[in-house]
Picture 1: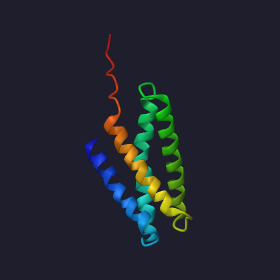
Picture 2: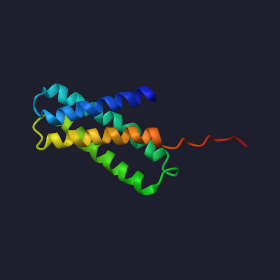
Picture 3: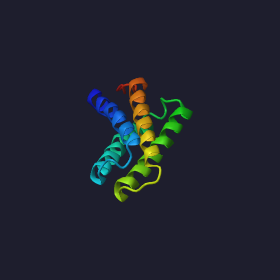
Length: 117
């Protein structure tokens, strides 16, 4: 889990840099960045679903909706390519989603072990 969180935390400055310097990157590098950021949100969504009974409902729901929107939007950007209006805003939201992902996995409760009778 630690290497995954380190990788996710490295995506934060990359997305901030992409937001500051829009359209200074190639179409291929942009598609790779959006694709990778989409893929790293999948474990968050899976964990939110898997541990839904252990988590507080409202914060988990807000985080799940935010992550789902980011997955859908970034999947579309990955498929369609450059030329998205307000792309810098999407990179800021991606950086925010990576911060939320890192904080969630660092602060989330551990699932209770299943004991056999």
